[in-house]
Image 1 (spheres, rainbow, N blue to C red):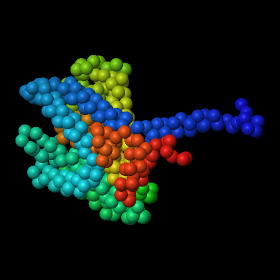
Image 2: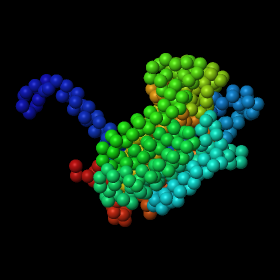
Image 3: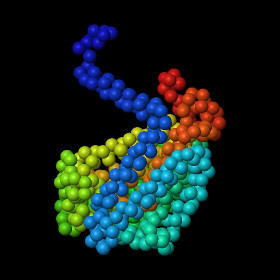
Length: 429
């Protein structure tokens, strides 16, 4: 094969490299330049489908334990369905709220969620060794779930307010790290190390999208490793889990029981699964089958096809949010969207990695799917907030048509921290 311009032989692999670059460029163009209205519907569809699958699997995985506890087989299902229905309504309503309203409500929302975390430490209920729940009537709520959205909004407000005025690593970290420390201390004192990791994801994404120097992330990674090591060493049950995960040699009837049973359930499912409702592992073999380890029941009953479907829905949600933050016209929207993306997709990654053995047992639920009314409601609410960022302020209708004239008018009305990104046809290079 020869080059058309000089007749010299092309370097080995040059065609593959060009094809690879061309493919990546097409993917980038597709993600970046796609209409935001598509992201609106993609977010709505993926969130609703994930929630529907989750409600269905909660019924399948919890019915046996409910009956053995002398309660209705629909006990967990009915509660999850109620929160899911209310959450979808909230998602739609929140998607219609202009983004400037969220900017105004960010600080009050963060304060309210911080008070909620503090109330848990005083009046909270302890479940499975973690004091992160508070009893409200006949329901238990987890304020840390609301704090995730409150923290994302607060970080977006802070970095949006100071966009262009922060210089150097110290300016980015201080005092923004205080926004992280407030919920981090709250969940840490409650003993929930898994949720603390998710808050770290949220803060890291906010820093990155705000333009913080990369050396911050190097120092942060070292700090996370040190803190994680101390957290593991000081808790015998965590130490057993981590050493068992590293060495692959631990007590199958003790600390590794949950992990091995979860892997066994996934292996049993094969390609097509044993059938909806036909799981054997949910008969008290997999602890928390309707909660942290619900993905293993999905793999057993719906097979590899079912698990890939779940992964595909999370991928659609990630791409839709990526398009929103890439096309965002304000730092507030970009940072908030990135923080929500890190929360939902990062938490899904941790949960699925835990179930498949790629990560040690950490103990975080699978967003939209695991049992937990407050978690499901707040995940849907967070998606609704991001959906609102696909709409242009001041325009009527459910969503914007994103015309060139509309974008130009919007850019003129936005504050100093705006960085408008037009469609490909409007860019010169």
